[in-house]
Length: 330
Image (cartoon, rainbow, N blue to C red; front, top):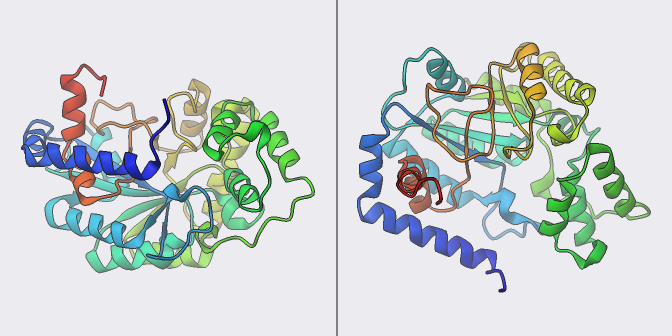
């Protein structure tokens, strides 16, 4: 069986979302899932009609789509700071009706150049989780380097696709993964980094912080998958990230997002290290609703919706309700 092109998969997701909304499932979900929150996780954005310059465009949503998503949320939902959502959940206070929080991972310059003007115009708060080595220029995002190598014409081992090779790399211990990437890049001149792959500057971070709309969390220093690291390496990544943000912003981050963020991407030791480092909440990429039941060191987030229909079906809880009715098999 051949996999569907991503464009068809996305069209199917939009159609499924529209059906759920139009048949009233979103309204039912909003009435039944009260006191819960939905957190959306974006990465970067790209200008409309401008080539991304990378093979994996999924991390860089068109800015017009992001604007439509934000406009929809501003009209129908209570978009609140992630830190406030976490605080209220920990205190067992419950959340306002239709509570949503926005987040971004990694720290792309487009968060400032494209997302921030829209968020400021609409008065929507957001949290950006920073991979501090990416901002410092010392630790390029390893998956981004693999993508750029492919763009430069370097064949991947075994004629694998980018997605297949990245999936395999993510299963390896950290040192083995880095060695594989190093060997792939040996003697390769990578193309000039496309605009979508450039990191924020710390001055841009401070400007957004000073707006009062944007706050910042930790996302490790060099973006390893923490469960593939030794405990000492995990500690180094967490502490270095915390201390770099403290040095640049004058206060330590309280929220953390796991790189990759799947259920096997952190360990009990990871959670203990985060608590020791002063983090009060940590966020995964596991789909689900944020509730006062916690657990607060591995809270759920939804991936970035790519249409207004998908946004509504996600944040209303329609998808969640369908999963519950199907016994979690959706």
